[in-house]
Length: 145
Image (cartoon, rainbow, N blue to C red; front, side, top):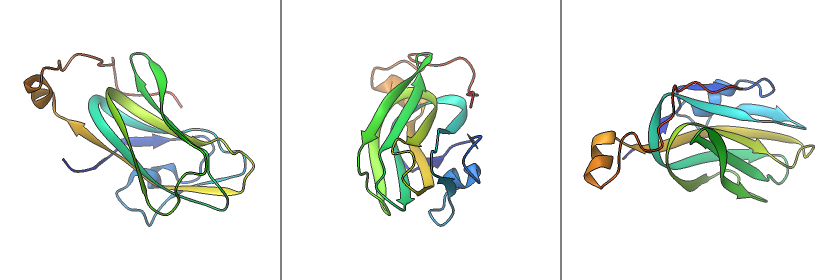
């Protein structure tokens, strides 16, 4: 399984949000000061096994990631003083239609999210290992900001 980028990235307060899932750690979405959510959307739900992200920041980062499944947001990663300048990987193992990220340190200087990617399992593979392609699926793939 390789890593995939999200279909769309939305935010009202991050600059250049689409740069945060374009397949390159050389480009980034930029936030300064009190930064809220940046949302990574899938047009159709996928069974995501893992996510990974690449962050850079002026100061320490309290990275929070939530995944959307079962009709609500669920925290899948929360790390004070998260790693910067390297891949951070974490498990999801849910059928999701997106994830969102924020730095809970707020007024701690600038933050960049260079990349957010995911790994997924095709429905046919999931059935072979006893799962159901419908289990945990969400209606639609678009998420609100």
